[in-house]
Each structure stands twice: as C-alpha cells, then as structure tokens.
Length: 310
Image 1: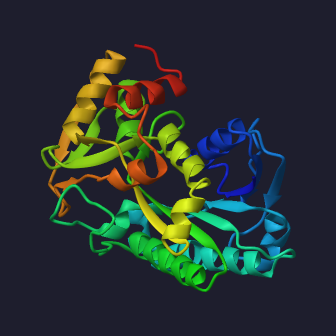
Image 2: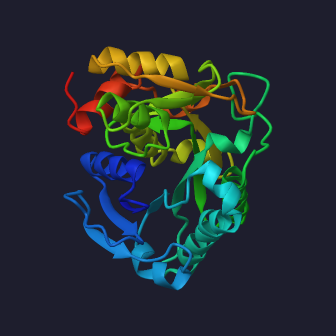
Image 3: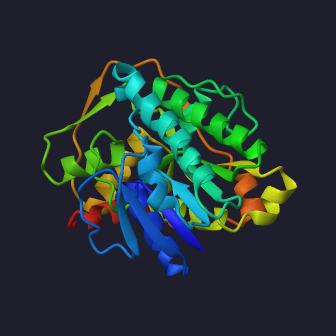
C-alpha cells in the first residue's frame, strides 16, 4: 500500500514509519517541522500544516491509507491551551479528511487514527474496554474524542474507512520527553537531575506499551479490511500492555541501570488511582499482542537509546 504518515518525525511516528516500510509498504511522511528525515525509510517528505487542507493535497494524492498521528498531545498543557489542541487535533483531522475527499481518483481510503486513553477519563470499572463511556478529563482528551466522532461521521457517509487506536502510555526507545515518568526517571539515573518528583505515594497505576508494539498495531490496522466491512467501516481498539505503578517504574529503572533514583514526594493530585487497558478486541480481531512491553524491556530500550550503561 501507499501510506501517508502524518506526524512522521515524532516519537511514535518514526516507529510507525519503520514498521510499515519493513513490511513492504511505500511510506510518505508529512511534518510541519523542518527536521530532516534522519534516515527514515520514506519515499517522499511533505512539509505542511495539518490544518491546511489545500496544502495537504499533494501529500494525499494517490495514497491508499493514512496513519494520522500529527497532534498536540500533552494533557496538562491542554488545560492552558485548549483552543490550540482543538484546532490541531480536531481541525487537523477535519482538514485531512477534506483533502482526502477532494483528491483525484476518489475511492474510499483507510485512515488509522492515533487516539488516546484520555478519551475515557477515569472510569471506575477496570480494566477499560472499548465499550466504556467516554468522559475526557482535559481538553486534550476532548479534542481527540471530537476527532474520533468526525471520523465516525465521515465513515458513515462513505468518505473513508477508519480504525481508531486508543493508545495508553507509549514508551521505550526514542522517548525523551521528560514530562513522562520513564524518561524523567532515566534522566535522574543518568545524573541530569538530582531527584524525581512524584505526586502522592507512587501507588498510582498506569498502562505502558512499547512504541514498537504500538507501531505493530498500526501495521495490523492497515489489514483490517474484513473487520471494517463487518462493522460499517469504523472500528475502535485499545492499545496497552503493562500496568505499573510509579514506584514500580522507579524500581525497574534502578534495577536496569544499576543506579539510584532518589524520589521527592509532593502532595497527591486528584487523579484516577488506576487506568489499565483491556486489549481483548485488538487481539481477537487483528491478531495483535505486545511483544516488547515487559516493564524491564521498556526501561532497557529507553536507557540504551540515550546511551545509558549500567
């Protein structure tokens, strides 16, 4: 297939590009940044703002599918900048769908949309399956849920087929965002920070999944034609793997690196005590299963990628 990956130079985007190319797909990259392709196996690089449907026209011409990852993704930042997240995450998705509708040649392309567990908010029932009510707790989750609904409407109208991947916490090689727990704990282990700040007692549990396993979910979604045909051209899947508390992550970082990670506890914040994915559906329908998402493997790959040594 000829596949366009938006947000191709991001943490998850790069892993998706590599996985699709390795499987024999012809991959195009779209990015609004001026960053070079950095050896990524893409046939062409398009520079455009994802909110500009006209500028997207050359990138979508002739494609069979789009893996749409271009987004603003920081939940806490979205509270201060809700309109920016809505413009990029919903507006960018709508512009992409407009560009696909207007392209020459027509046809019904497949869109694999990178969504988030943030659309669920904080359900009481755990683990969370795809039938759980959606109740986003921040503008980031709201913008992603709005984009999902836009995709569902366009799918119902016959414009596209769509697979929505609600990813929990992607981690592993290439994740250097110290706003996330594993990169920050590794930065402390490497001596770049004196300690790790942790809200509360560290018992909060989140679900982590290796970026390579996330990329495999995108690859499998491209082959979801039969499933989509049976479900009206639209299907939602969770992508998660390994529940771990914040203290368990610190212990894994110390175990893998052989270095101490001092922790300073701050007052607890109002947040869900446990958010864990039920991934039964994607396993049964697409044959996906996590291969590299054991906690120590997640930490080891992230540590090795930044040149860490025990």
